[in-house]
Structure formats: C-alpha cells, structure tokens
Image 1 (cartoon, rainbow over the protein chains, first blue to last red):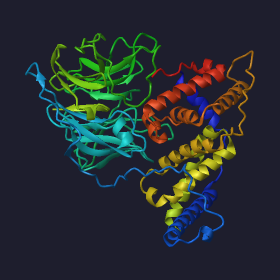
Image 2: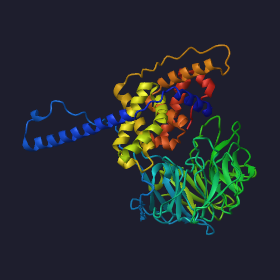
Image 3: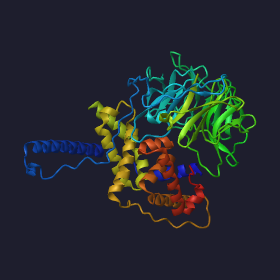
Image 4: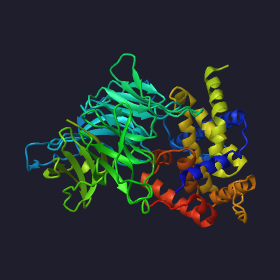
Length: 393
Length: 176
C-alpha cells in the first residue's frame, strides 16, 4: 500500500480544521464534571444513609446527578521518570518446573532467555519482564510500562540490565537493572519505534537514534556509553535511513532494515553490504530482523511474500520465519520437525535457540552452527503467550 | 495566578491545534472536533495534579479523546454532520492541480465518514499520528490482532466506497 500518500492526504485533510482557543471551555467542562462527581458522591451517601435508616426516597433531590459517563476512561499516567523502581525478582509460582532437558549433546547449552508479553493486555499499565533458562523455573523481573516493554525493551548481553524508550512529551531512553532497580533516564529525545536501544556486545554501550523534532532536523544515530558519568555519546557521521539494529557478538557488524531489506554496517555506521535476495517487488521482503550470528554471517528475520502479506508496521517485530546467510541470501535449513517456526536467537557460541509452536505449545530447540539439533525443551505454559526479546549467557 | 493552572493553560494553548487536527479526522466536523477536544482537555484538567509532572498529559488527553469518540458514537448512533456523499469523480486530466486535490480531499473526507469510529480511529492513529500497532492497541484498549483486523477492514471499506482512492493508494488491505 502507498502508506505515504495516505499519510499526506490525511494531513492535508486535517488542515481544514480551524484552530480555536479551548482553554475557557475546557475549564468550564472540568468544573461541571467536578460538580457532577460531587453530586453523585453525595447522592450515594444519601442513598446509603437512607438504606441504613429506612428513610424514604422522597428526600432525594428531584433531579439526580448525571452519572459520570461510562465513557470516562480509567487511565493512569505512566510512572514519572522520577518514580522509584519496584525491584522484584521472584520465581513464578504459577509455572511448573520443567522436566530434565533431553540433551543430545554437551557442547552447547541454552542461555538465559528473556521474555515480555507477545501482545497488548488491554487496560494494563505495566507488564513483567521474565527470564527462564531451560531446567529452571521462570523468574519475574522488572515491571515495565506496557508499550515500551513490547516494542523497545532490550536486555544487555550479560543479562544484567534492560534498556527501553518511554513515550511522552519527550521520548526518554531508560536503563535499569533487570530486576527494575537503579532505573535512570539516559537520553531525552530518543526514537521509540524505528531504532530502539541496541546493546553493544560488551553490555556497556547502546546504539540509539534521536527522535524527530518538529522542524525536521535530521535524526542522528549515537552510541551511548552507559557507564560514563557524563553519558557520553559518540555520534555517527553517517545517517542511514535504517531501523531495528542488531549488533553482532564479535562487535564488527551492525545489521539494520533499510530500503534494500537488510544492510550490514560497521560499528561506526559505514555501510558494508546488503543481504541479497530481498526486494519490495521481488519474491521475498523483510522489514524486521530478529537476531544476528556472532560473526555476522547469518541473520534471523521475518521475511514474507510482499504480494501476499503486509507486515510493514515500523515497530519492532521479533518473529522469525527464516535464517539467511548474509553473503548469499540463502535460507539455512532448520530441524523444525514439522512445527511452526516462531523465533530464532543466536547465542554467543554461534548456536541457535529456535522456538517452534505446535498444538498451542511452544518448544525450544537448541541448534548448532551446522543446523543440527542438539537438544530440545518444552517451554512452560506460562510463557506460551510471551515473546523472547533476547538471550544472555 | 496558580502555577498549576498556568502550566495547564500553556499545555492547552500549545497542544490544542494538534489535538484538533486529530479530532477533526475522527469526527469530520469542526464543532464536533472542538467538543471532543474540549471534553478530553476537561478530563485532563481534572487529573492535572497527577499529570503535570509526568510528561504524559498529551498521551492521556489523546487516549481520552479516542475513548470518548467511540463511546459518544455508540450513544448517539447518528451520523456526523459531515456528509457521507461522495463527490463525483473528476474526469479528464488527472494532474495534481488544486481542483483535483480538493476533490480528493472531499472524497477522503466522505469515505472516512462511512467507517466505524474504531476503524477511523485506527486509520488516524496509524497513518496520521504514525503510531505503531502496539501503541494503537494500548491506546484503544484492544489487542494488536484487533488493530490489524480493524486496519484491514478500514482499508477494504475505503476501497469499496471510494474506488478512486483505492487506485491512488493501491490499497491491498492487510493480510496479517
């Protein structure tokens, strides 16, 4: 779809409206709502007293207060940047312990996996980050605001910290320990959807992009030193039109979605090469990458036929439908056993955690670099409706 | 003057134009848009003590606006004052001149009027406010699956009520 044309025409149509000052009208309505609430509260008290004393309803005012519109949304503001975190690390009691792993090899093991919900829970203000290592019980970690948790939360490769971007008057990049403690605002004015915070392999730096300003000033890509007292940022001189960064474990490659599909950059943002085989008008397209091999040689991504499917939302989408060789663009064969592929994450040793689903149950398969299955593990049912957002050794 | 009220005044004066633009796309009418923004701002004012330092006042106001719009429509069940009659398609030259742009705007306006409030809301949020599917779902209190399906239905409806828009936007609908 020509999204851009629709966007421009909606913007054009919206300009038909005449700006007016609504300050006084809003304040009058606010006072009326306040009065209605007060009257409603009074009426409720009278009703309670009447019920308690047997007084006739005749004493009620002739005209009852209008109820508060059922439409009034029950909204609470997201925690303020100064809100104290809620450290909470606990074993999830609702989840049965998984059975012993049916290990087929002993050269690779599952890393610790981090999860957030896969979909929005209507009405929820916050959700839990969780972790699980096959063989252990799932662990409840930080409470994060719902939208950032689903779209930008990123766990450092050492599994110690989590970064995310909260929307607001100024979208702000935060970093906290994975248990929620030590929450700190790091960058005010960070992109919340296209380039979400991406950890360097040493778990110290974060690649991010500035959020757009109203004047259309180009948005810079920066690498933040999260340990520096002054929150030092090394700004890229390059400004690629790219989203969804992944940083390889060897530190040499950053992959991003571009107009070419997937492009590999060096750590300073210099373009290295495109992954072949992806095209808007061709057989396969992808705007969502999920994980990159430690040496940048393979990438897990969601690719689809552009004529049959539309998966173009700008937000992060960590599903995987294939693993591609980044040199040839050819798909790597995975031992799925007839099950639906859901996610793939590379571990630091080059092995892959392949998440598959069948009959409503999820299973994790540990696959070595050659594509051979090492072991597999049934995932606890409490994690079925969650998505993996990262792994840590 | 009360500093809190000062802050609220400043918020209202700086954000009302943008709120009105979204409200106009939601309602298709100047007066209904003003009523919608006014009501949302009033609720924001009621919660200003809590909102003023959080940096989330606009998000709260917009969320309120979208909820009010959907529920007002449910209560009224009457079409907006905006006409839903589509203008006659212009024949002949298809150049991007002022007249054809005006016709296009009228067509889009009328086509939007034929959508349900929720369908219109997802289109406005996705394509005017540039919200992600997760953000739209959170704002409207639904799942991402519902956002996808409502977007798909909204685009299909636009395609059926205004084929000339379908040609322009090459509306495929969303399969996912």
